[in-house]
Image (cartoon, rainbow, N blue to C red; front, top):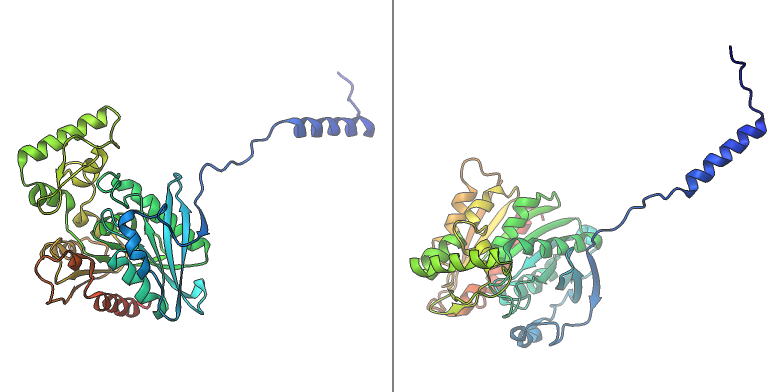
Length: 356
């Protein structure tokens, strides 16, 4: 039988020191940051940071009494720079203020009539508004973006507002922004989002693109085939040689990724009748009486889908904003140019009714 081994205190101490040295000298994997959302204040945007089409409207970007306006540069999680206009009520802390994230329409920006009206008219009433220029802002971006990427821009704005101390949100989408906002609300289910505001809303964009805009089976099939070829060749973000019939009789350059994610009724995700019934928040839908871009029946497609059996939408309202003086195709009708006060009054009343 082997004799028991006794270790002296010195031996035990030496062994412990050895183990400690070995532990300290062994590399330990530290946590790394893979990606971040960052923001910083900037001066009033200049010609170099705003689309040319927006520069004339910057003169109208001034706050009403009782509110302030400043600007932010926000880096989305994939590195894209989002420029935002931040309207704030004076004398209210972020924690006590509802923040509205506002998203513009196709190729537009935060100076557009509808988004500017939301910020300018509601900020003196006690609401903060962060209106952003998404990656589909400007003439060189229109009909080129990937539908699913816009949610990164919206999320960057939401996370920025949360970092500033805001805890209660409504999100607003105008025209093309309406489907981007629907997708975000339906796929995030963020409990901080308490309401969704949809204005200038179409119903089902892939269906509308196929049957109301293009209206030609050969042309539509050629666009789909060209988009598939570009996707397979790794050129999804590039302009295709074929133009897509857009609004009226105009044609528009279009990328494969835009066509396949927005316009193709087999692969496109921009169908409001699908996403709206998956939004777990109260919704208001607004259309101007003078809107000739959106057909009269389209908002009802959304309202009907939101009220369908199995929808998770707690309640939805539709408001037709009167404008009898401009019913004959004036493009300002789509953006609530002539009835912006009535437009924002309807939103304000809805927000107050929802205790937001």
